[in-house]
Image (cartoon, rainbow, N blue to C red; front, side):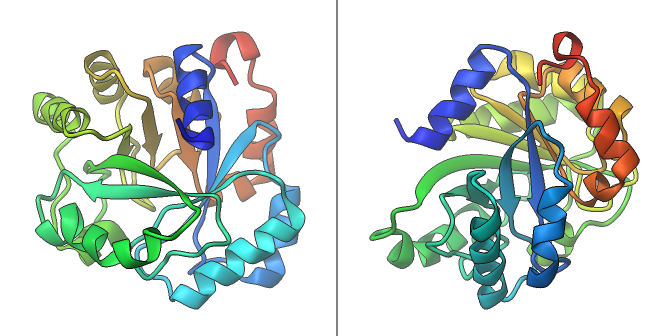
Length: 247
């Protein structure tokens, strides 16, 4: 079993909650990376790098810069096959299960094989499910798909299970960048009870209350983006009780 995934799985099995920070190269300049890394919550376990529309060279530049100043594992969170760089440690091999657009179910994967075949990147098959966060997301625009309504809980559960049954190692529930509201506790809870693989949740989480709610509902890993740059939020994350949050 690969190292990074084994760490994620081990933590999930031991109910140790994990925190990852998403860095979008489209919104981050390399010269700002060092200061950004200094403000990471100390509980951060992984750095995700990627975005829906990012120039290939910018992804590599950001990852290379991160590696100069941080020992945290860097996991690619690519919007398409061009955002692959050997400078990272792993890649989420994302299948957009919710939209049923063949280009993002398998098309982009086929296009990436020529690079990944000889790559040393750890490849983590991930079922990516976009749910309605109250605002049109970049993923929605780029993939030309619609998110699943949060009230259609059974549909979300069935989609997650379809991902697990098809061999995915992670399920990622995403409300989208800039979401007005995150994935609900009800959705997280029922999906977590249904699947046997780690559950990642992201999008729209901007407060410790929302973070704790996601953990309490069953998220094994929570991904936050620019919200952590709010020092007050970052400080509050660091004060979360180990007993209550698991991080």
